[in-house]
Structure formats: C-alpha cells, structure tokens
Image (cartoon, rainbow, N blue to C red; front, side, top):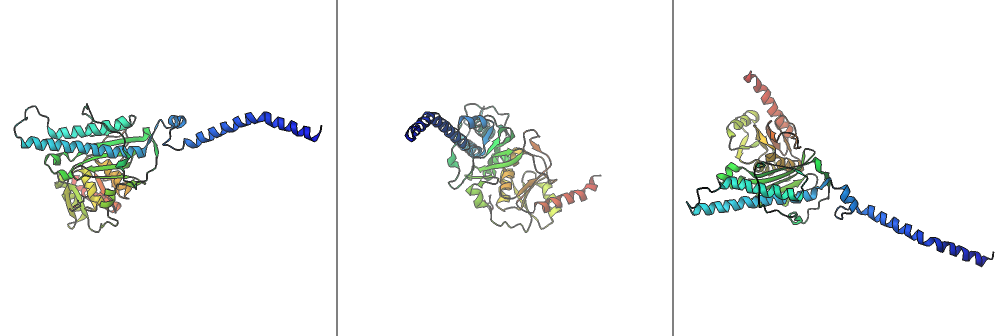
Length: 355
Ligand SMILES: *[C@@H]1O[C@H](CO)[C@@H](O)[C@H](O)[C@H]1NC(C)=O
C-alpha cells in the first residue's frame, strides 16, 4: 500500500467515526450543563424541582414573613381608622356591630396566616388566633423590595418538615383597646428544628419593622436602634405593666434596691427595649405563649443576646411541644448567665418559705 493510499484510508476511518463522536460530545455537554445548573436555585430544572420539593427557600420565607407582618399591621391600622370614624359619629351602629378590637386581631390573623399559607402551603404555621375562620382574604405575592438594597441574602434551603412558623397578629391587645398604640406589634417567627432563626417585629403605629435572620442580615431599623456598645452597668429591667406587682418585688429582691424598672406592654415591644438598650433585661415570671416571644428570641440571637426560661433553658419552637412556655422568661443582650444565676440563687434561698 502506498503512503498516499494509507492516508486516504485513515482519513476515511476518521470520517466514519466523526458523527458518533460528535453525538457523545454533545450529550456530555448537555449532561454537564444540566448538573451545573441545578446548583443555581433560581433556575429550576426538572431535576432540582424534584430534588427540592420538600425544601423551602429561607430567603423567600423571610420576605414572606416581613410582608405578612406589615400586611397584618395595615389591617390593624385600618380597623383603628374605622373605629375612630365610628366614635366621631356616635350612636350610629352600636347594635350588632362587631367588636372592633377582636376585629383587628382576626383580620390581621387572616391576612398574615392565609397570605403565608398560600405561598408556602406545606409549612406548619401556628397563630394566636387559629380559631378564627377567614373568608375573602386579600393575599399577596412575594415582593423582594421589602428588603433593603444592601441586604445580600443567600438562597438557603431547609427541609419543610423542620420548619415551624409562629404568628402573633396583634401583640398587646389590652393596650390596643386603651389606645396605647406604641406597644402594639405584629410578629412572625421562623424556627428550624425548633430553633428560632428569623424574627420579624413590626410596629404598625410607629411604621417600622425590626427583622433579623441569624448569621445573615437584619433590617436597617433594627441596626439603627441597636447600640454598638450597650451600657449594661446598672440593672434596668422591663416588666409587664399588667401584672407588674409581683415581678417588681422579684426584681428588687434579686437585683437590689438600686435596680430600675421600666413597665411596658407587649412582649415584642419589651424585647425592642432590650435590643435598643432602654432596658438591660426583660423579665417575665409567669406563663407566656410562644408566638409572643419567638420573633424576639430570633432577633436577640442574631444580635448575640439570649432568651431563656427562668431555669436558664432555651425555648423550643418545634411543632410538637405545647405552645405555652410556663417557666417564665429572661431576655438580655449581655450578662445573661449573671442574671440567671442571681434569679436561681434567690429562688433557692426563698424556697424554705414555702415549706
Ligand atoms: C427607647 O427609649 C426612648 C426614650 O424613651 C424612646 O424614644 C425610644 O423610642 C425607645 N426605643 C424603642 C425601640 O422603643
């Protein structure tokens, strides 16, 4: 065989194999692109959709939680407006009219819970007003503009079965009826495996939203009220104005005559007092519901603070326990152990009295 002929043969052989080789290369490219793509959560491929059907994107849940708290707040404001209108035109519709205050709780609950439920249908949501029945509720679509522009948040996924959401559609209802509106908040909290990681405390009458996502980011308002180096040299304890008597005695006994007390209302508002260093601790000696405290717990964690019961134990926000925390509450930004030890010591020394 001449050199030329051999070359011709080789050329033919290569020519014959070129088509299957091209097909293999194209297939490989498709497979590689496919597998690289499914890591990018925003671009759902069939594979990622199947893989993530039991997951929830926590960034989206944060956006929904902020919107729910703000929408609930709008309902509360609207009820207040109609109430004031009613009062101005006295005696018009007293008979058979709804109680405007329970109206506010109910309307806020429906907008918050139904709104979140429509977007995240598989997530367990607990609300203070779960007995309410809702109809004709205005729902909402996720709107990322509720985050500030500099908030750079990851598309972190969590197992849907690990997530619980706690809603308080109107905290400080008593004060709301007394028109002490500064205490009123609407709250949403997200817990993963019982641990609070996203907290939203919205103050509708102040028009501000404090939110935080542990290890990620916080709202500009929250950053603005949180001092860089809080002064905790003197105990200044915030307690509930509704049952302040016994807890005031407790504060004096435990922290001494020099300690100061700030009476306030609403668990959300009181946590904000601790966060802003208007108080060094928030103390509650009786039962308290988990939707009252979960959002504050998450925000405190995000700021390096601590919330525990009066035994110094963390509170579990998982789906299985009771919604009531019956072991009291202590929330601080700093020196939590010191406060808890004093409380535990005083209980020990007080114990013989009850023998
Ligand atoms: C802290 O106290 C000051 C003075 O009373 C008040 O103006 C401010 O609103 C309080 N901060 C918060 C977060 O409520």
